[in-house]
Image (cartoon, rainbow, N blue to C red):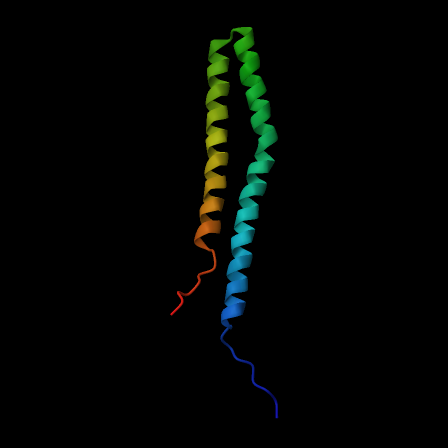
Length: 95
């Protein structure tokens, strides 16, 4: 007699999928932020060079670009941490 497979996933399988999604989002956030770090350093150097040369308008523009890119990176990283926290395994209270 052939054994029938249960169509509904078990609790352990659902937890492993949830854990994989949790770690995937977390690592994607870290990778995205890490990928942007060299760009941030370049923008920082451009801003410092413009300040050193006394070009106020250019320095202000580079500072704005730097702030926006830094804020975007921090938001992505924060969303990754929030997703990692919210998707953590749920433990049932002891009875």
